[in-house]
Image 1 (cartoon, rainbow, N blue to C red):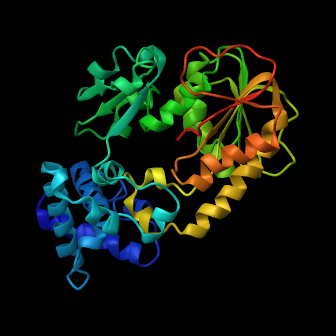
Image 2 (image 1 turned 90 degrees about the vertical axis):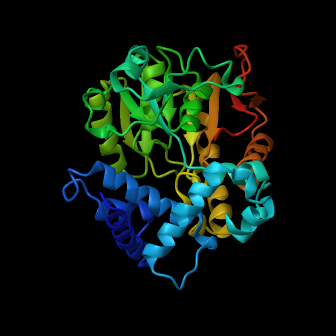
Length: 369
């Protein structure tokens, strides 16, 4: 695989993006497994170059060819990987994120440097497969840090640094693991569902968190999984079959006051649609497509979703609000508005020992991202 082949394929992807195709869709279209089925290394290299381009976009010379810009972005990424502190915070604040972001959230130097790092590939092993999955796959390391100390005995998260196409492994086909970011896995642990309970994943999408809830519940009890997209729910059914997950019921829901069921739940997860600022490390193209209007429009949607599901909890049930963004309008402001509108709910911390049993439904004091 030559450098020129990587840069030429990268330029093809970037031309599609310039025409309005999202970067991830452009990568799938250009590097589909049919066309490049024998070249996983090329797919990885092109994906890395495309995302480096958008990570370092404001450092690049637009009059140069896309190939030269992609190479310059890769060079900048290599420099940053060697010495991140050599990049001044002021330059990162001015170039790494859109100008409007500072008015919506606190933009710290540490966060900006984290944003420019290449993301870790995280796996979530099924609980029964966590002990031997690292040896079976190789190139795996367990999640571990002082911040996760209270969860380390429960986490089945592993970072993967190997060269294999994980989607083609027997372990993936057998449902032994899912590719799922660590922050997304922490949402499941914030829910802390118990075997035999009844839960509702209200904005389930393609079911990544639904699958995790089921695993934590040992495939016992019942999970309602709803989404406005029937296509996503169909994909959830395929993933559930592969994972051997059977304790769920899929039902479309458009987010309105007309709920998909009158069931009362032990817990409800609202993993709400959001501006996605928290995904900008993995998806840097979104930095330049997200607008401030998106933030405030989605904040209104998030508040309506919480209001609609609030009555579906049993007394003492748990309501978890989760978003993959960091803007104040979509996190603390939504939580504060819900708390003010629903005095019957008690705000409780996330991940702070066992929850006492009390008669009022509850929502975590800090939205989980």
